[in-house]
Length: 454
Image (cartoon, rainbow, N blue to C red; front, side, top):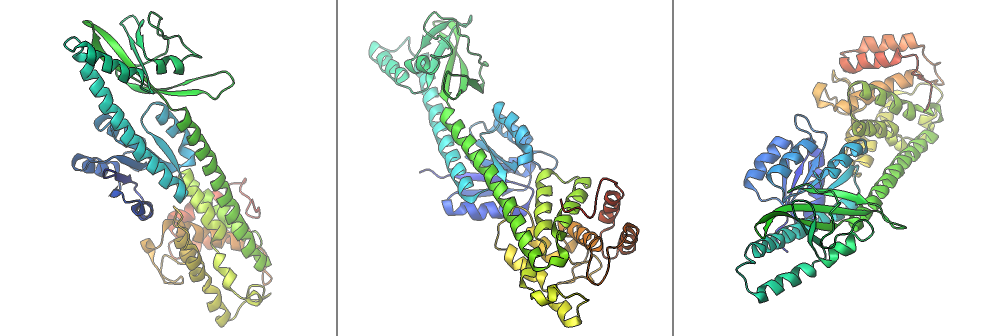
């Protein structure tokens, strides 16, 4: 096997680190870039076979970057890695031929390794096909000078090719078609010599075409055309590559990825419910935190993938309370100093639990930091300002607001005006001012019900 070189492009260092750690076991030469611009510089000096790029990146999106790659380095196999929200965009890009495959975040390790292995195989096969096609063109150019034996050899090569090969003249009349072309198109078009060629194609371009078939799945073709000279006249050499099996596998993987995402959310919800079962006084708390955090994130311009991460972080931010003795959690009054210190341990315990899961979002950091304050007065590490993750700051505000809106044995539910006053008082002290301001906007929305669990 020749050296397989892959370029990973993502503006999130944690994503790049996780992908590199996952893929290096497969023996690839791996290059990393945190933007499309940096990736283009790498491509100028490094031979790359496969690119895996995030779509949502600042300055230059993944689709824009891969379009440039297609134009400058058409032989590189291009893959997009992004959230489910980008599926329409990615599907359009696939139909236009800009990318080879779409991988969804969060990914399944085994599936992404298999997909990238297939991408290398497809790249190597395509390069080999390109080499063979070029050889065929060279042979075709010299047909006039070659003898009958050479012509017979070329005929065998073409006629035994599994891809369909068709030559049409300037008026789109079929001049030649190999047996594979006739077999592939038999249910849709006649392509015998003298027939009018009705299958759409684009001069000197490659694109995909879907054709319906009776009692079968649709036929998916990769169609490539080249301009050639035949008997002194301009003609089109059209190749048809059957992608139906690959399309089927892609659909199966897409369905599997959806099932995995659904299972992930169900698992997170189950964990959230398990934690709350041990602390009935806070039933519904984690769901409220998740809902408010997502509402704040949406107003801050988070994309759907980032909002998914906020939702999961909110649902399990208190997972460390599994460690806290039930008699402390269920105490009807306020806790003493010793018990307070034990309760604070839940952030560290939760971080230890979640750090074992390779999420594409900073879930473990949020679990650890959601009680940190921007003035350094929080716990467990007294972090300040930008030392605290943005997602942690959002969940911190959502956590406090949700807690104040819930009944506790030692106090009633606090009125909304008291909650708002508390937020304003701690704005810029414990909580990030921008996040407080946006939270206040959410709370002023009559449609947002603090007591709701959904």
